[in-house]
Length: 385
Ligand code: 3PG
Ligand code: MG
Image 1 (tube, rainbow, N blue to C red):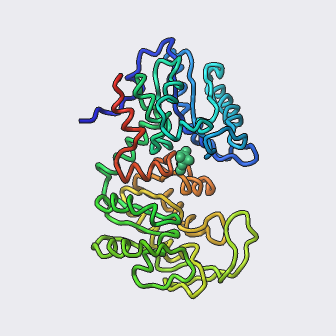
Image 2: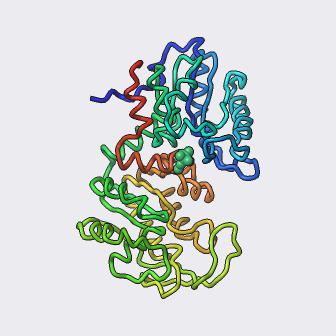
């Protein structure tokens, strides 16, 4: 039988203690500037609580981007470190007490999950706090090793994520509607299967809808299609569940360019669910967006993960914007998975209008799929708690 997830209070007394804290400070940085610091602001609650309890110092440790196991100045923690000091000071705490190590992934032992790396990290520390929910799906050294070596606990961010996402699996208020988008159906099949038993309605948009539309026999033109997964989608559609697919689409003319950072070209058109030869579906159409909004508005619980179209390109933003607004306006309890949907909400200025915005992209999906994550399980099974 698994123990409960240990929380910060389980670490008391903390007077004079030195804390090792795994954080997910993997924030987007453009030209040396942090463009979204949510992953840094949220764990400040944990940091200030630890200091208020008398912790002598906190060593925060995070990865940033995907350097290949060796130092790479493009992934230096310097901008993150500077911003962390500002946040600690703004919270009325002493920045001298909060250190940030260099990018954990500069050491190949981190991603390899080597215990020797965890042993080095914990040196000189009395307790371990993991507030890096966004990295909890990685069985990396700094995630799973320290709970074996020090008394450990989930920080406030981690504990809240586990409570909210776990709550969706164990007792969401009905009707429960999941809205899934994003490009690849292959990334989402596991979570779809896990959620189908729990949700009343599954709404599918984004690039992944084309594999479902193909499974229903529609022509998808040059849209994204994962031919290997058509059969899985057909089985899901045949299982008698309430799965809502788009009824109209916004498509782009053959060979045209789209997205962010390119010279956009071509002609767009509204069609039903038959995409003309060579054309590419890049957003759900206005009719589908309105239908999806109605479903979201009637739900008691809404989970949204993945954009409805290529929202980085203004020609294909409408579907995602309409769905985001519906989620923001929903009367039900709303949970939004991190990653692209979080970025979309931030772009529309709606991030504050949902009940729970997850700090994890892949982590939130994997948690919903498996009901647990390596980093969470490691905290529960810490032998020293
Ligand atoms: C994320 O941004 O998804 C987390 O920080 C984990 O990063 P990773 O996907 O590079 O492991
Ligand atoms: Mg990821």
